[in-house]
Length: 232
Image 1 (cartoon, rainbow, N blue to C red):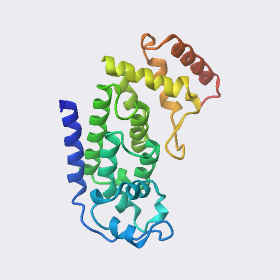
Image 2: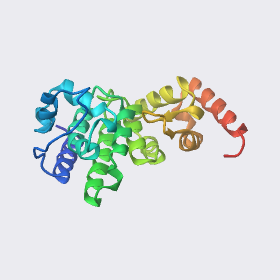
Image 3: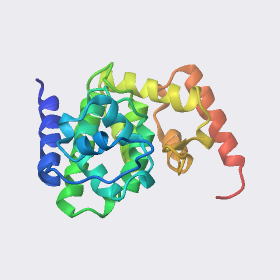
């Protein structure tokens, strides 16, 4: 295990500790979507949940549960561990949206700090390995939507100058600029976070030497279109 992998492992362990023991707790939820046996399982250890049930519950709307914030709080350590391994069967934007709906930004300072350390460790590890278990665009979407800001995470990508980070940067530009339209890019499951106000100024500052000819052309085209829009 590398130092960066060890940092992420410790960050995930610290998050589990910060959120407290996974004690059995009665779960009341939608009996149309879940059986009594499902709810009984959810009332026990999260780590013992079968993958089908775990993924389904992690994806469902908050209105399926009497106490969605408490349930998602219990699920979060396993969700993030699975995401970090690239094995989560859910869209990154959906996880971030559900985290916000669970109100994680109102948790205590130590709990929020534990989440922030997971984000830092995950991004650093991702940037230093290519390919990574999860594409860089998904990692950034999870962090941006959950925290409400995109630019700091983009700056970390630009400031990391390693061969693997360069390849991730290429992947990110391909995903958000070449194959998408950055001025209209929206992150989160419901598209609740417009990316353009932070993404396009960042693209303007990005060293053009790190872009391919096609990427430079499309970046400049999108920036020109953005500049031509009415004042925002």
